[in-house]
Amino acid sequence: MSGKRQQKRQKSSWALTFLFIMLFLATAYVLYSGLEQAGPPLEGEGLEVHFIDVGQADAALVICDGHYMLIDGGNAEDSDLVYAYLERHGAKRLDYMVASHAHEDHIGGLSGALNYAAVDVALCPVTEYSSKVFQNMVRYLGEQGKTLIVPEPGDKFTLGSAQVEILGPVRKYDDTNDTSIVLRIDYGRTSFLFTGDMETGPERDLVEAGANLKATVLKAGHHGSDTSSSYQFLREVMPQDVVISVGEGNSYGHPSDEVLSRYRDLGAEVYRTDMQGHVIARSDGNTVTFTTEKEADTATNPTGNPTLQTYIGNSGTKKFHLPDCASAKSIQEGKRVEFYDRLQAVLEGYEPCGRCKP
Image (cartoon, rainbow, N blue to C red; front, side, top):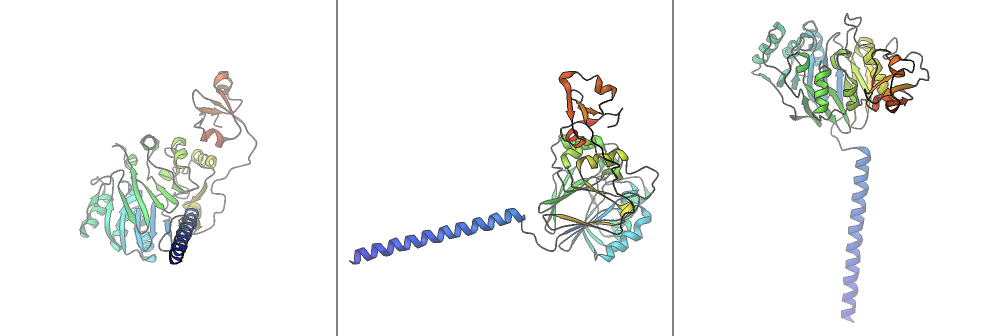
């Protein structure tokens, strides 16, 4: 009898062990599934990106878990504004200061930042440039015992629980705009892409280099100029939201109507500092919400009166046209493609005809 009891106890013990293991695995699966749906666990109160209204210039303050990064600082005349903005948000210490490139409308106001905040790391695509504002920036950095560091594509660092990666430039360029540092900030399932004033040629180089450009929010390149934000580039980014840092009534015609139409084609929401003042984006790791300093008096990206429209594409030239365009009428039958909206044409790699401007 004792042998049978022992066998029963062993069987009972194995059954309980098996049940415990199954319960453990089931619990782990449920927890894992929950994390997959909700995104990775994140510390702190979220990520904030403040697109500061510095007129026809760029400046953005990134805040995560009590850590700060300043990307550009506007013109020299914006120094007091940048100083006050950092002071208001308690940014007495900047983990990183990024000068996207050496033009004054991006670095002029960094002197104000350096007069208020201590900087741990200062990034810039060059260490020398023949302008007074650049030399002032270097001098103020030197007073803190710091020098400019030129980052390389693939460099990564953290800002609190956010991840930052340098994506470009991927080559050497002569044009100062094209030397702009390109960086992506990842926070949970959301991301922000900054490209400075980089233009279409280097944008193409980024795409061809296989850079991970996908982003939830895009800071529009070169203040919304048509020298940036090419269709090829935007198809890789596919932003849900675009922020344009631009001056009201500027003499450059920024943002370009053509670029605004490209953002409409992608279905992206547009925010503009010239119409809405400071633009603040907040991410909880899963979604991004926006608040603005003021309400825009008119639509930030007006669409006009939408009408049902078909377009004719040429698979040989990868251009699309209005049906009555002379180029559309001359397309060979085997290369003729019909689209029922612009977005379909854009996503399939076609660009608008320069003649009929569909």
